[in-house]
Every structure is written in structure tokens, then in C-alpha cells.
Image (cartoon, rainbow, N blue to C red; front, side):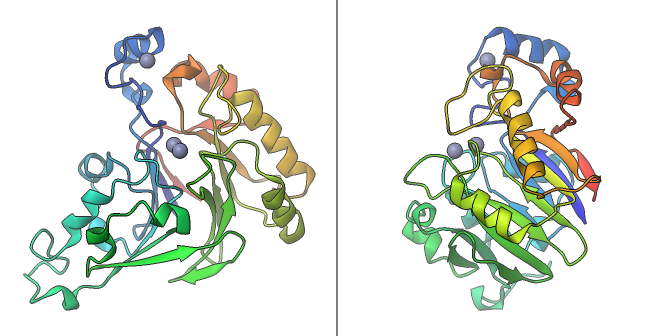
Length: 279
Ligand SMILES: [Zn+2]
Ligand SMILES: [Zn+2]
Ligand SMILES: [Zn+2]
């Protein structure tokens, strides 16, 4: 399974658009991997995770062919993870999926979008009714099959009113757990994991607060280390599991370069924009 981090920041990006804090200053000086756009990832070339405001930039920067994406999993409708107006550019006229001009929208293979009912309520009607999109509302803890993937949405502790989810994704050979915008996983999710014991080959955990405090709806590095231990304690990982931290805020007071050695002490690698892995 191919997995690529496209964007690795929380809502405001690093550096923050209008920010002049010490972390953003050090980021601008150091450049490179320290720059982070809003969180998004892609599995192989056909399953996209989240659709935030940097999707277009990711497409250009990392040479993605988004016409090949068939499935889009949304964690929640905060606007750094779902920018619905951009979905309109998949309509006939804005996009020719097959190279030649399509006759009408009925020729289009639909993009299947999965999100919670609460997040779905944030989609504007013109997006919901757009012909080339097929929107599915999903519930946590009910696995479903899309193409070669088995997907299980898990409940996150994040933003009441959004029905925030995170995802366990298997392709028959490998399994990944992609989690951000979670505090410590809620009891229901831990019970599900304890009972079903998935053993992901790759786990990416929320690390929004890094070295700072971040409230209960996110985690910092110490929380991520604790969460990792809790998953190990219930048998939801194996010796060979690859652990990453991801989804960072400038409020965490730490650039990428500064974080790498600190995360390593807890057995984590650190995501950066464009990092592609063969899992
Ligand atoms: Zn976020
Ligand atoms: Zn800043
Ligand atoms: Zn959020």
C-alpha cells in the first residue's frame, strides 16, 4: 500500500498565514520540511483523506492525478478538512475525467464521498446535488467495503456537533490507522479496538499541541506517546507497526527539525508534507 502525507498542519498551517510568533519565524528561516500545509493524505492513487483548502496546491506540488481518485473519506467538516466549494470543479466543463470532453454528467464516474451525518449537514445543497458526486453518510464502528479497501470509521473525541471520525483502512494485505483531530480515543472506540484487535502496520496519531497544551480535543507529543502505549496495552499494534505523529500547530512551539529527535525518543517518526511511504 502506498501512503502519502500531503499536508501535515492544523487549521492555520505552519507558518500561520498572518502569524509572526517565534515558531513561525523559525519555520520561515529554516524552510523545507518545516513548512506545513493543511492536513490531507492519499492512499495509493485512488483514496483521498480529507479535502481541505490546500488540495489544489497538493495536486500541483506532488504531481497528483485527482481524476483517478474514486473515494474520499472526510474526518469532519472543519474547514481545514473539508472545503466543499472546491468539489464543484469535478463537474463536467470544469473537469474532463477521460481526457476528451464528456457529453453530460451521466458519463462521469462518481466520486464517492464518506462522512458522518453531522459533517454532511455542513455541505451546501449545490454540492450535495452535484451529479458527479455520490455522498454517503457513515456511522462509526460499521465497516464498509469500497473497491479493494475495507474501511472502519472510529469515533474521535473532537468538536461536538461535527461527528468527527478517523479511519482504519485495509487493502487486504496492509492496514493503516490514520487519526488526527482526536483527543485520547473515547471509550467506545477503545472498546471497539479491544474487541476487534486490528493490528495496523502503520499508525499516524494527532500531535497538534506538540510541546504545548491543546485541550481535550487534540493531543500533544506526551499524549500521543501515552495513546501509543494504550494501543499497545490492548494489543492493537505489533512489533513491526510504524508509528508517526502528524497534524501540528504552531502553538506547539516546535518546528519539524526540532521535533524529529524529541519524537524519536517515543518511537515516533514525524510526518512532513509530501512524505511518501510504501507500507
Ligand atoms: Zn484539523
Ligand atoms: Zn505562529
Ligand atoms: Zn477539527
